[in-house]
Length: 268
Image 1: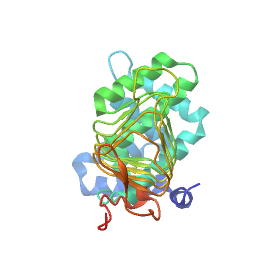
Image 2: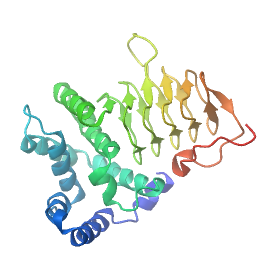
Image 3: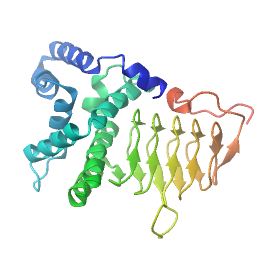
Image 4: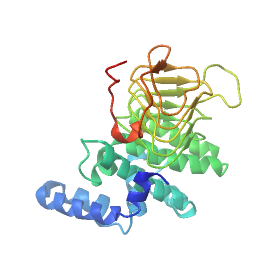
């Protein structure tokens, strides 16, 4: 369990969100029914998430009621989904200076919505329900401009900031406490089958527009600079930048995912 996960375990995220929703409803009465329907009428974060995602992903082919049942079933059968959801909310709250409430990513950030939808799709994929998992992937791509294959694996405490243009391939693995910005590709490097996508270690920050291609391994606490093209393994605690990416600067101390520092060392 990472530092943020340990802290998250000491917070009552759901009660904080309810308090924020009550205050927001009082401050903006025209949205009072919105905060009631999305937060205040629900008994738990999982219940609220099932309802909220269903309303966002609803389509003529599948009603919100049917989607809510699918999502609720996944949450009931895999408690790690709700746990990771709470850690994801904390990741936004702790790392994003534009996020000053726990409620904010839940209601307004499509990176959060896309990630939670993927968690449901991944559960479906592992249950052998590939057709429905691919439906989720398609809807997420259409609604949020985020394309994550249902088989891709994500840890907890993930922040996908802005999210637009994110592409994640089938055999990709993203470990705990990773921060990813918009227009990132975690893709393959050819048309072959098998293990062909990146493995991203914990604490990594991937800057906007970066591309990591092929079954490369990115070690823990790595910083990948914006716009970089990574084609080879990256050692832990390093910074890489450029096209193709190369190591710059000295050892990285701490987890770039937590600090979200986009700059390069002045000595580089």
